[in-house]
Image 1 (cartoon, rainbow over the protein chains, first blue to last red):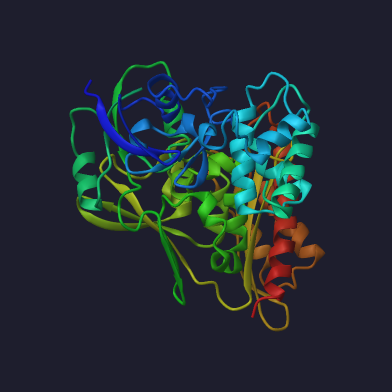
Image 2 (cartoon, chains in turn purple, yellow):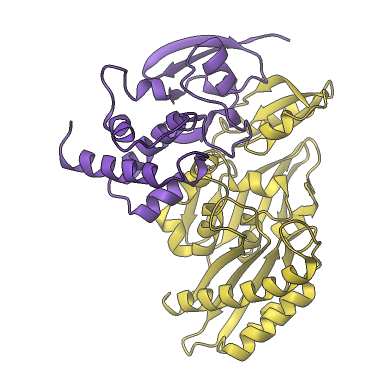
Length: 160
Length: 290
């Protein structure tokens, strides 16, 4: 099988990689580009752990072929913030203890960022529906929703 | 199946040329939310993926006095934000909003939902209610098939292996027309329909129903257009008696199976309830449409 050469933009950086036609974008991010912040949960689009943005739209990277990234703009958790410069959403997840094992957290933060970009003032119900594709088996969601609503409020108020 | 080749043609002609190759099987991809999962199955038969998203018109739409012409590969996430479409076909917009999660809607398309041909596909009853037609392109030119005739079985449609769905078109509804789609699932989000109902009604200035289309999903091998249910509404003021008659007609047309989501008996009943409620909503909306 011939590998395909792909040129794409990941978190604003032009990136090139070689992949098999069957590799998913998730495979490429984790195995070839060492961007392991994006997690694999179900591998079938049900859990949202692998959430990324593709040309600005929230998608499951397990349901995107790596070759489809050609010419596209991909956004991953690594582009949201850095360890010494966290994004507001990341700070709020810490503040509200909105995680336990942490596997769902990158996906939830990427999804929350997409939510708040589309709708800076979501109701709790809107936030819960938007994030329904991000499964968390630890927290029971209450702390996550508190962190999301607090992030929205903070981002509306003043930029940190 | 195992994906061994990926092609992203720029034109319909190029796509059909690729589909005519006989070296290995080709699979057409729009959003890939069904196809990519299928490719992860254990069987090793090699397939070529033909991605339609780079073809002009596949991801766009037009809406004018004649109706809507929809690029089949447009994501549901984009489709459900089209306010002009929502104003004319609110039920169709609702059906697209019910497919999977935000992430799945970011990729999944109405054309893909239709071609994948699940009996429980949410957009199919809503398309049928709106009289939608499939514009199919193949080596011998174009042909047009009504959505209710397009799906021929579970995961089967009427297209040959070298044909593809080019556009989905539907007429502009007559004045005083609106639609609604409802489905029942055991939870509030992220599940597959136990039963679904798409209804379009046209009311005249006195509130009398002059035309209707009723389609039901997840209660037979394919979504069904139920003419008897529409006839029960036509000529009435869409009152309680007419709604009950439409519900009974829908239940009579249902041929469901029993599975873990619901028994055949339950589905038969609930599809009637959904038709009744969807018709009520469509009529309320129609009263507000000039």
